[in-house]
Length: 492
Image (cartoon, rainbow, N blue to C red; front, side):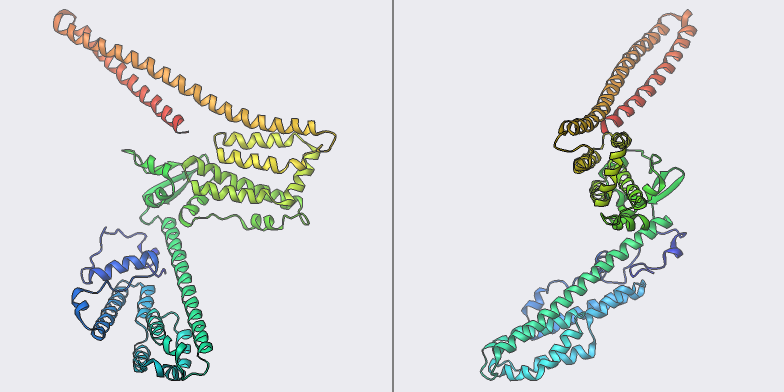
């Protein structure tokens, strides 16, 4: 069970929830910090001191501040126990510290002399316990704060006091102790935050797997993926814009892509990364100049194809971060020396093979500028492995490279020209149908005028009016369909 979840997800998947939870039994500052903990794994201390506290002396003010902090942490423990948030219980108790040790140790600190002339001798007796407490309680932020504050207050006596024969070395050692203590504390905080993020990602993936509170469906060749609009729209401006249109159904058909590709898209949306089959990633690692084999090279090619599919789906639906990640992974696969050596052997057998590969890839994403960039980079990196690159036949190599680049340009321009021609045809079709619709409207108005003027032709004119009305409805529907197609082409 998640540290943040009020109950196990399997128990709530079929339960109908209200959209609010009444927490009136707790102070607003406690509820506010509960929300903060759910999203960050930590919460702030008490708010700034009140005007009444500012008027009190320093001792009374310090005691009041400690009481307020203790009350806040106590409230956090209570609300965590009420809603079964075990992670918050541990966090609040950690902030409260151990009551006995914390109180006794604080008393010991306040018993140390304020006179800096005798501070060195006093710290001599307390240093072992200070060091031990600092290293053993790095998770207790309150005790660490007290210890550090007292150390700073006594530094003048440590550095300049005459009672200690080696005060400089002593203070250096003490600084190192607290530096180490601070490093351990920061490392623990980073680890804790990472654990919170991992837990949150896991909870979200479980929620989308069970369809809990999901309000958007992604369809792929008979497979349905349920996701959350808010999370998807935070990743994709394209889907956000599409869902913002009125009367839009919360269903996106992605059947142009394999279910595994859509599954990896969902995985990226919720975790910021996507998996690669273990056999593929292992062979990518093994595929070096020394141990590349036909088997590992073919698997690496499959890995590149996987990343290429992720680039295409990311470009289609507007996931710029996914495009960047997949392109980097594809470039890493293609930069493998073993793949280059194997590809050189393939070029030796069939130099035209690369053209077939380029046609196959570019035909899938002729408008994908990022994919074109990856492919162009790969062609450039492999120029040294193209057959015939010797001092005597640079011309043949240049012709081959020119052919590759021409093929890129031809495919890209052909797709752009095709879209331009289709858009122009649609515009003409819409214009002609609009003219016909305008004429129909004029005839419709004339028909109504004739009905009032000629009674003997009333039945015939009524029939004509009905036919014209039906014609206008059909033409208006056709115009809307053509305009939707034009919008899609314009977006592409």
